[in-house]
Picture (cartoon, one colour):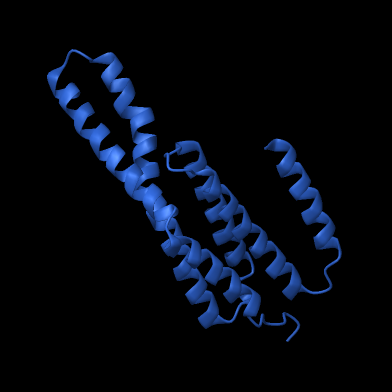
Amino acid sequence: MKHRKIKRILVRKKRIKQLSSLDALIKVEVNYCIDEIIYKISLLTNEYDENILHEIRISLRKLKSLIYFFKSFIPKEEFSTIKIIIRQLITPTAKVRDYDIDKANYIDPSYLENNQDNDIKTFMIHSSNEIHNLQVKSLKTLLSHEYKNSLVKLKMRVNDCAWRDSSK
């Protein structure tokens, strides 16, 4: 996977050097981010993987940052629409990731330190069930046609957008 990532970076750098306008740069960079998200989602099979989910969230935040970075070149109404779409893409991953972090940092250590405490045992069972349910729900959402279609539509929207010229 690391070799593939290096190859993709080199191809991307070559493409960026060949660009003749800011419009083309924005489109290439946003498309790259979206392709990266689609690729990472494809790594999720029918099994939840918190590391892949984390990578997907990083890619989504990169996309969001990129859009904010180029905000002054995006028509205002288009920026608002794109921002909403990105927020909708991030939302299904937020709660489950928070639970993953809480479990690793608080729940598991508490259980290891107090595994004889009945309240801790009850809480551990309840939280494990909650986490599992969230994982299933998030996985189902990420692998859904609607989610993939949202990414494809975002990509098409970016490619069809008439970006503002900064010199005006």
